[in-house]
Length: 383
Image (cartoon, rainbow, N blue to C red; front, side, top):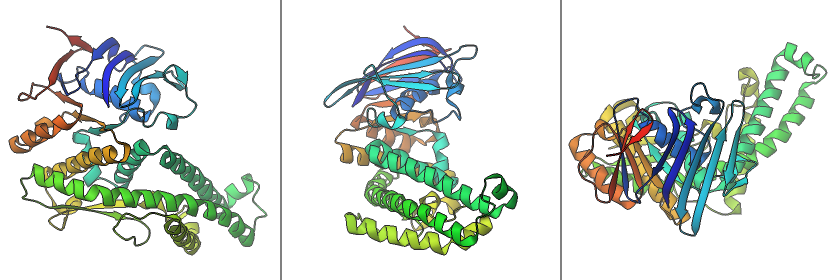
């Protein structure tokens, strides 16, 4: 899989620009605030259907303009695909090979990317939400089914939380025509959500468990490579109940997970009513990351945290390749300046395994099959 070309119209600081890329390494060079990250953002947006930096789609539109567009061409094992994403003030439209799609989920898998920047330190040191997002993006790029189940779970959990809040808040109850609802009626209504939730939760947790178990040896190997064997990295999946640290499959496992979640939702109802929201489930999952048996988040240096995060991302490359049969694109945004000389050299050696996009303020040491793209004020500077 490789990106061959991209066109930008009114995207961030790009009024109109077009770039073609090497199948190897593409070095995006320029001073700060010239548009290097914006270009990489546009590529990654075509993989997951939304920006990893913007809270709202309209934020990517060039100031003073009414709309923006990304057009990207990607070559895959079985053909070429053109992805077009249109951004308007209040909506977004996506086309694949000229045909409109109704849901973002239909885009997933057309372009698979692994993105790493200094901000990815939050994968290690910030909240569990960031680690759940890491799992969800990886799994969604591998399986559209997972993405759909995750969306279904989110909708059901919002409905369950609303019912809990309405029942707890007497004023809200009256406004929502639930003023006559007694506790037994409430429990019957909540049990309907619990059955639906437990089905989705079982499939989400099973997928996440299998992802983390599969990632673990690749992450360990990548970390050993980056640290010359000085450190040992381990990762563990943490969910609402104890899960065996092995790849689990089959309907029996799904049913077992469903039973556990259903029992948890029923058991936690009193607590949920006190809190006003659902306190257990995949939306509380986490990944525990250890270096030499020590919790990376709490006790390791920032350099160690950065290397651990990078190791997870490099492992993600391998897992997506293993699951889909195609190596995803690797995007490294301003990462080289954050690494010491040894780890920087190691990372650059790793880049030879797939098409890579690297942004930097200067040209790094020579990389085989690389193309230098110089950026100034949202334009490519040609020699």
